[in-house]
Image (tube, rainbow, N blue to C red; front, top):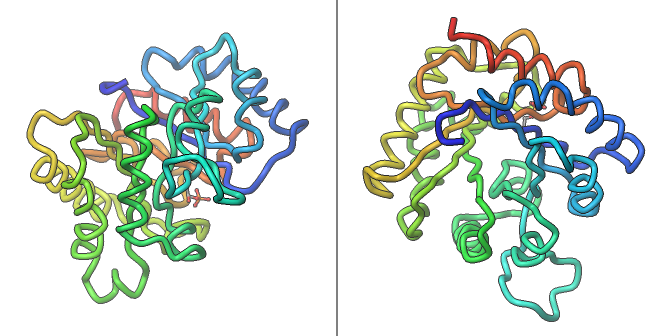
Length: 252
Ligand code: 13P
């Protein structure tokens, strides 16, 4: 898994029992066929974790969560789901700090650090999402912003770090950075992780933001791009399958 390309879907707040079942069934063959080269996963709404786990029994699609509670214990936190509960139902990972969480739920570094810590204690792999807004990119602050978002990694004793670089302005917009911009940010993120976590840390840095069937191969061939975090195009079996297959193809 630390040598493979990662193709992860983020379903966001989409799906139903019936449509999930159809989608997962359709992914069985392509995910199995790609499994030597590609580590495939989907982040589903928490209410569907258990049914999705059942539906992927027998094929190597990892099921994970899109968030976790900032609270690690049990008790009076109405509406929350802690990392131990995610582990209990077999979630393999959790997205942490997706830009939609930062934007709509005011999640800051202090909150995200506790989420990362609870995931690690519960043996859930956290995937830290980082990325700058358009205004920050236009004022050349992208490295400062992403560097600040990554800084919390220094507080952890993680031996494995997965980061998704998702420029906010590329999410759901159809706009993507140039391959040169992606390469520059991914190299920067690698460098930051190594200096914050030590040279022995295992790293995967995924790109996210308007990845689709047309651009996946080109993006996945960029140096330091270890995979993709796919939103809209992960909701249809055909498009998600094509992206998985693009990750199998030899680099351009
Ligand atoms: P889109 O692929 O729909 O742009 O979403 C990206 C994303 O937010 C994945 O987490």
